[in-house]
Image (cartoon, rainbow, N blue to C red; front, side, top):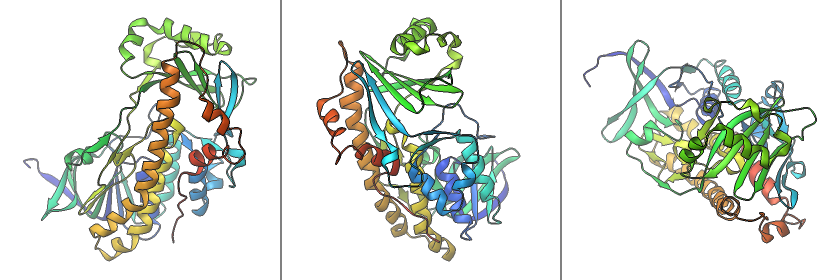
Length: 406
């Protein structure tokens, strides 16, 4: 490397990416006495339409850390049930009130507030350091083992050396790319446009999915506004742009007539964010000295909004397994394999569930040429007491609960 290294930093664990997985892992390790260097490429945590859903599974983890009540002091909204509305009327597909938990709801909290909350808590521990605007470019590899990273900061190149490097740098992971780890990809049938429309006090609460002939609209209650997801077939973005904002406004008003008096708030494409939906997973989440978690290891479809929660569960399991090896200064491949072994099958199960919903429900609605009906099997399951709690449990608590050790 021709550029001069101006500084060498050392830590037990270098975490790349201060999203939910990286921030929570940094907190969990630091509170157990592991020195942590957390690197974030952006200058702040503010981003439009990031995952903002904190499910009961994560609230239980925060309770184990003594942080749940403090988090709920921040301004937030709660979603107690998810409802699907078709031409036949509404049907609750997930009622979190039936779950055996102290937190029978999805907490809607802007992700930048959640990340600031977690990293502020982590700063209480002397073993934790967060560096913003740290653009990681290279892995340091010696004798077949990853020994850290090189990143470009505000004052030049820095070498960060660590016993273990953890990539938590999201769906477009730089570390995954430079580490030569290729994911197995699936083909979700849709993409999503996100935007905001004002919410009135008399509007219904919670989360609603509106399924009409050829269209899907998702409404998430954000107190004074609706976070609106306009779902459309993958590959259709250019046609939507060509049709113009007025056509988008008309479509939204036709699907949800109650919003017809406020779609005029949508005036330009700059108000709209495109989410290109992906779903993939790595065959192997690690190399000697390197572990990938969260979206870097497995990109989730937005179905169920579970991505942030599975990423945080990855962080909890990683901390549980790796604290003692990190303290000893010797993290072996079998330790990293143990993290993947505990987290891979819950991830694969939820991705199979998401794929089934995408094929049976999403593709059916987007391709419908007449009034859309939910599949008969789904309607029957939601009416059987023994099965009707399954979607809420799978979405709210995950395939397998995880708990904080120590």
